[in-house]
Image: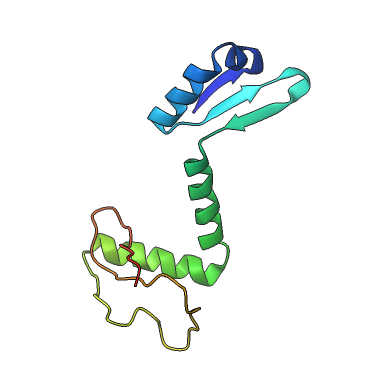
Length: 111
């Protein structure tokens, strides 16, 4: 995480934004009268919002933590029907095919 003043940021905004994007970093700007700001890419913001959503309920948090633990142990299941029993999925939803990935992510492909 980097820091700068609003004046410093304004002086070389293009370079600062390019560096944030390249480094996948966040910039904290301090302004006058304790008016502070956070600058980050839309991709980073969307990732944070998705994480907040996924962790928004205790039940979902528990499921995700267990899935991460299973992935780290090398346990995974390939699913023919990605819809768990009793779960209603809208018709235009993306299907999920669970496969082992090296980074704890679920590979997704459209049906």
